[in-house]
Image (cartoon, rainbow, N blue to C red; front, side, top):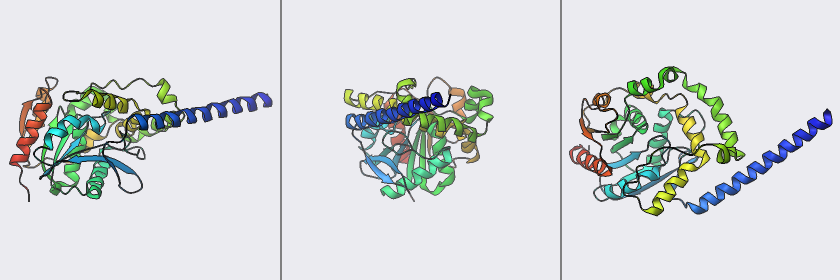
Length: 299
């Protein structure tokens, strides 16, 4: 029995070592296939990736939906840079950014972004653009740093009540319970199991305006197993809706809520102090940001 147990441990150790080696080779291959767009900025022991272009103020900061790398904003950012400074970034564990300790709720993402913008020399005030789940982070950021926010645009952003209705009782489970599966997920990622066993990212990307090469890069980044671990770390059972609700109102800042046909009535509640418009394509986002930049008041 002892001999069999030792043999089993030896085989397990070989498999783990092989998996780690496989994963490291695959990560080097990914880095070669998808060279970094942007620059890494240290925010205190770890780095986040940010890419800015254009000139002008207020700067526009683009916050992605869940499971979408910051690079997904590339075609929108190109257009925005024509009339002001525009930046997209990768949240912790996304794209070319380092992972963060889990759990990583919206308040942690908002503080990460604040540290990143300061370290990268992107001066406030900002127009914050939040897509989908990212709009919760934008609302939390506004609550934490209200003097830095000149205006906002929400892109098909869920209201917290809509989010809770879709997830039922799961939305009331304490966020911290997402930590144990996160540990398992990270371990699976380290030994290569996430790469070979996990399903592909089934998020529907808006590829409007992307070149064929940019599409390949976006889809390649989205397949990386580290993003799934980051997704669970930031979502868990999701404290984002609760934190966004606790952050309070948005004040009198200019706000445009771009809405798909999916949840027009619910998103009307987000636009009570602003304007609601239909989301048709990336041109709708560019037009909304242009309007908010035009009417925002810069201290």
